[in-house]
Length: 96
Image 1 (cartoon, rainbow, N blue to C red):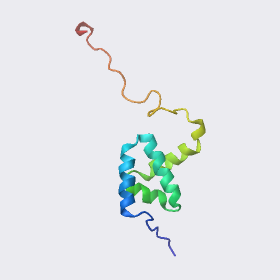
Image 2: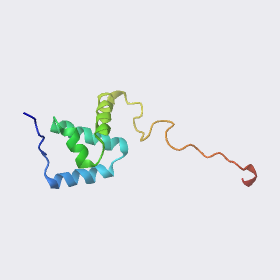
Image 3: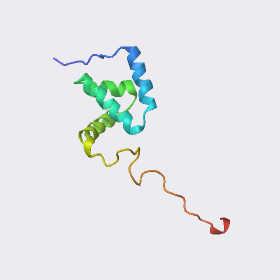
Image 4: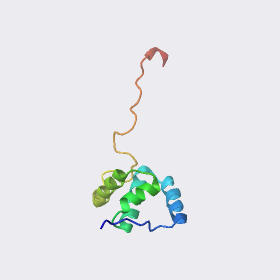
């Protein structure tokens, strides 16, 4: 007999969760998603990924982040050091 996960969050609270999730940074959003998924238990990751519109892999990645939270090297940062677009070099020095 297969187990079919039944959504345990009413539509009103699903909308509230989506609204709150959209206000969070990338990292905080992942962590919020995994906490909600863990509250629901089995099948929670897939369910929350559908509610929030993110990938289940994103939530699984956040689970690993939470396990190493006390030793987080990027604490207080949104992106990792060296991440993001690199500075544009000055291709024509005579213009500066």
